[in-house]
Image 1 (cartoon, rainbow, N blue to C red):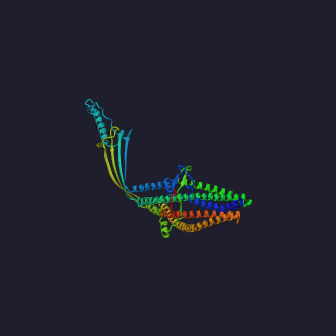
Image 2: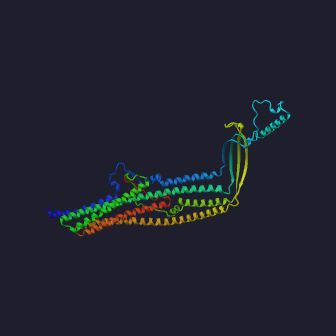
Image 3: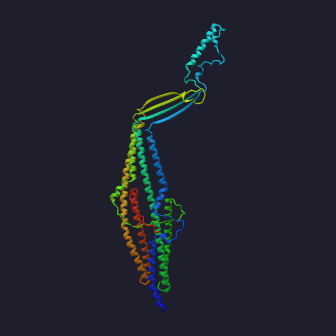
Length: 502
């Protein structure tokens, strides 16, 4: 076989090699990006469900919502306590240093005096009369304060008070109702926080997978351009390609590098955002193992609408309106009287020394009282509170109506986005197939000398754009499903988690 025949055979073989390279590149693109690279042994294999569960378990927003629920529990307890009887106890010890009663008591008799001086026969009758009169006066005054608390040096007082509200103008029952509604709203907000975190993690996961796929497309596009440049270079050496064709192929190859670098940076940033949401260290290697397929999901719009308008955020808004209604009732209750039953159990003891006495030395003082309190005029303070409560009720009702209208708009927009993304998937797939065929034909035509390098470059560019459009359509569809799930508060599962490629 001479040189001319060998060149002819080489010319016929090269288009087949180029076509084989294109097919291999497309097959590599169809595989997950992480399957083509060796993973480090300490790589965290993270699925979409695992990412959502990790975020829900460690999210600061969820922790704050749970803390708010604990606050609501505490407020329910405090509001309920107002209807229960209140029991208080006080123990007081008093040490008297000097009192006004010290001057009223006579001096104590001498311990060795057996016969008072008033009965001493050696004294004159006048002296004995004066002494007897003074002695009687002192004994009488001393007997007046014997056993009484006046002037005692040591005093112990123990008091137990029992207070039972009987009527408070609706303030106590209103406070309990407000606390229950607040607890219900806090529980609904916790569910909303969970749904919002789920949407954020799913969106970040989708963005990371999308960025990884776009990076794979950019790498594959560069590999195709590099293979084509090698082909043109071989043709140039054989004298079948011009210098212009070789220069254009080199420029086309060099132009792919910025796209590869940009796609790689976008993939790294998307993965860092996902790591932030799921609390994974930035330097820990992560492999995303969930792939998404454009499974056709049939949506019952009536059921979807029912779930959207029965989501927790609307329940929380209705609970807020109910709280404001009870606030008006509580404010009006300040115009009404309050009735309270009081019971006091008092015990007193007066020992001679500071040591507490035994139980038998305590004196009892028990009483029961019925207390009625009413403020007929408070300087229009109650009127101001009622007006404020009514204004807050109006604001709550307006916010509920605005929320309902906003959900209706969001639902319509999400359904329109879902329909558009669903219609785009099949069209984009067909476009990719046609672009692949066009590039293969352009390579064959160029190898046969029937076209120029410009035609091949245009075909490659169209294929890249078709691939990007296909991937974008797929992720627009998946993102639309995730948005519809979020509108239902996470109670309608639409997003299909595909397989683990391992």
